[in-house]
Length: 96
Image (cartoon, rainbow, N blue to C red; front, side, top):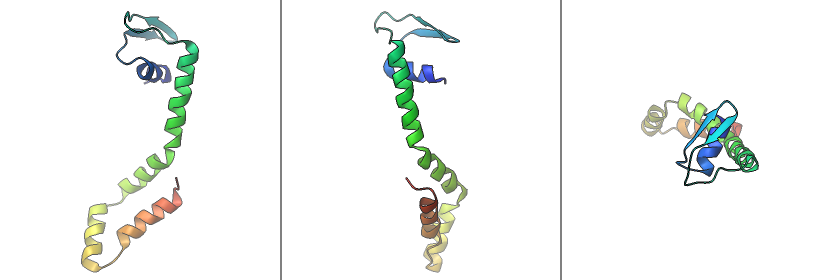
């Protein structure tokens, strides 16, 4: 999904339009076509929101590498804190 498509979807949900390259053809009779300034502002807002969640995406990638269920079970059986230590290490290495 391009930035313009995401911006249009956020600004005018369910509107009817066609985007061919950089040319926007507005087909909707219910909603007004957003201005270029509004589209650009929404693109910047959506990008800022995406960028602000980089830490979460990075942490998730690291979390996904762990076998967390097995780690928690082993910690329970062995009275260890391997899982907690691994999670803490990820949070420390990738702060909010």
